[in-house]
Amino acid sequence: MESNFDSKAEEYFSWWVQELFDNGFIKEFKFQPEPFKLSDQTMIEYYEPYKKKEGGKWIPEEIISGHIYTTDAYIEWENKAVNFLAILLEAPCRKKKNRSFTHLLFQHDQENNTRYSFIEIKPAFDANNMTRLAKINIKWVWQKYGFFVNIVTVEKLFEKTFTPEKYLTTDKTDKPRKIKYKNIITLKQFIKNHEECMNF
Image (cartoon, rainbow, N blue to C red; front, top):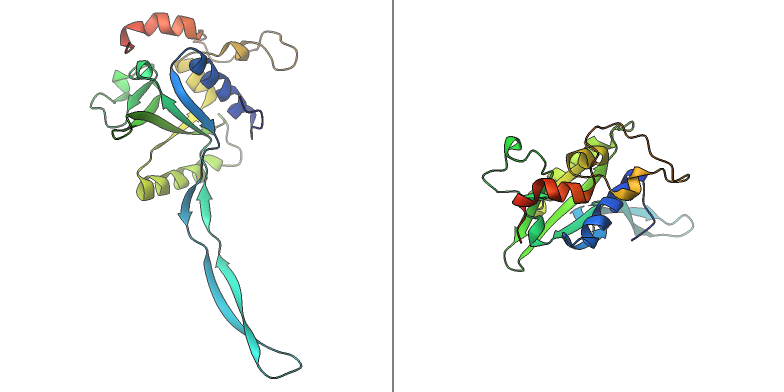
């Protein structure tokens, strides 16, 4: 598991992913996957005369920089995770009332038979309003590439699914962590509660 995360939320999410991978629900995952190119760099040239002799030269100048967007994570799901931890974006039963514990949406690449999700991780309290910027990038990705990006708040995800074992204790002292949300269950308990939804 990678250790260079931009935030604690990303690290905690990685624990959730790793636990699912270790238990056969995730086929492949990657943090900071290949970026999406959303716009090209715009260059112009201006003419600059020489100071001490006749003539001059054309100098290129960037007037608009290119723009890329990198999601926080990419997940490829095993079949048994379908309708259990993730549900198809185009599924007719995708309404929230029919997925009380399912949080992530995935897309299905029919040609390669892969079920995948892109993830953007945001804190519960976004002091710098970065979620707004992420939502704009996500709209561009959808329009240009047709990929949907899930925005995930880690504590909400844990409460809706399961809490990774590593999160139950503090990072430094290994003492029981004070957790604000109420639905604190392990992956084992989560599987037992919802095993009728699993695809074996």
